Length: 120
Length: 107
Image 1: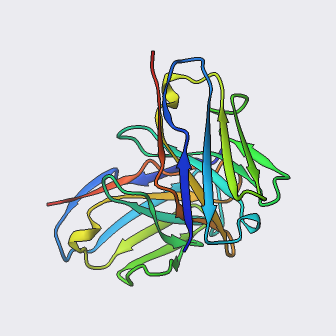
Image 2 (image 1 turned 180 degrees about the vertical axis):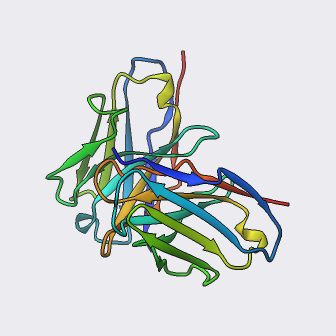
């Protein structure tokens, strides 16, 4: 069965860096675009970033562009999110999400999430 | 960026009620819309994609409709497990924004 397992979250001071990982299994990882979505405590969902199945293209939300970098290692079935210059407003649960392709797209599988807390 | 506005932001309903949530896009997105359900402490779950296609395993009391800028999620007969937050999301172009959410509470 499809599994997405995030790791790397924790408490970090403002201005510091953190790298999240997402280990994928149960499907052909290299065939799917992958995304990061976050959810601040008590708030709604916010799309963060995407990387195409072959890693050839990435895109970011305005709130993280220039600070976060999404990448993947298809040989290791792993997705990453490098987060630099962290701010308090980056505090959230970060979800690794699989993209499903139909006529359009959808997010069909979500990891359990990893909590990132940015605080001094 | 395309904005999605959901209404209402919250609603109170009873078991058995018919519930309708709307999602309006700031520009036309064809049928590139999905709906998700999130219960407290849980991961979001895909309900509807391509505006009107029911995701695998989702009960048939859920349905989606719309195209262009106006979309609707309908729950035909609300069940106890349906009390949750619901989000729409577009896939027309990056960024793939979400609506702000609609919380369905027990009356």
